[in-house]
Each structure stands twice: as C-alpha cells, then as structure tokens.
Image (cartoon, rainbow, N blue to C red; front, side, top):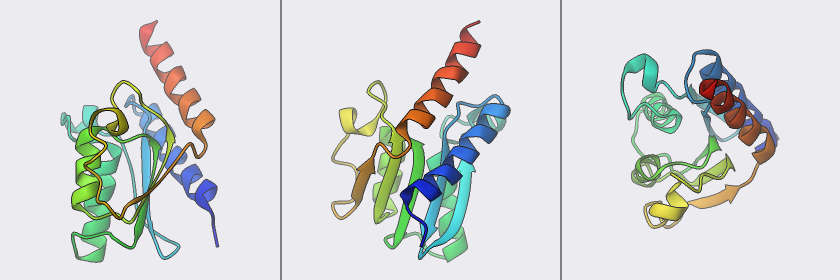
Length: 145
C-alpha cells in the first residue's frame, strides 16, 4: 500500500507540469482506496481564472469521476498549503484527509481561515515540504529576473 510520500510525489509531478507551463508550481492528487481519482495543477494563467487552483481542479475532477460531490473517503495531496478559497472547497466536499507539503504563511488557510475545513477532516502537513518549497522558490526567483 503506497504511503503519503508516494502520493505527494505524484502531486509534485503535477507541480512540475505547472512550472513548465509558467504557472505557479502547485500540484494536487486525490486518492480514494489507494486509487488516484484526479491529478491537477494550477491553471490560473491558462484558463484566465483566478479560481483555477490545483485543488479546485482536482476536486471537480474527482467529484465528476465518482459521480458525487462528497469526497469523505478521499485524501487530497497538495504541494502547498491550501488558500482559504480552496480550504472552503475542501470543507464543502467533506474531504476526509488533507495532506500538504509546504506551508504558506502569507496566503494559507491555517493563518486566515482555520475553521473552514470539515470538522472530521484529518490534516497532515510537511510531507515532502523541502521539495515543494524548493520548487516554489526556484519559480519565483526566475520570475523576478
């Protein structure tokens, strides 16, 4: 049975796809019963949509794949701590477990909206944090040149 690191590596693959496309490198994977239901990455530039975060794309794809809006038996793996908007969607989708890599003290939900997740959602942070953080730092360093 794969562990959190295995699936976070899959989310990092998505983040690298975003990076290659000029998007902020955040990737997400939704898993249910050891099966990947959805893979996504940020698409805000491509779709010209500020709500096209990796988590939002993954939640929509997973709900469509399951044929229902509640993902209570699923785990969302995302490379960056969700923003309040995404945390709200995670809460409304009743996602059973959230696993994220890098913390986001400037825009993350834990600082600004810690109450938005569903009360039963289990949260694990810091999985492959260094890899996720390094990718984000590299992206923004290149953008500032």
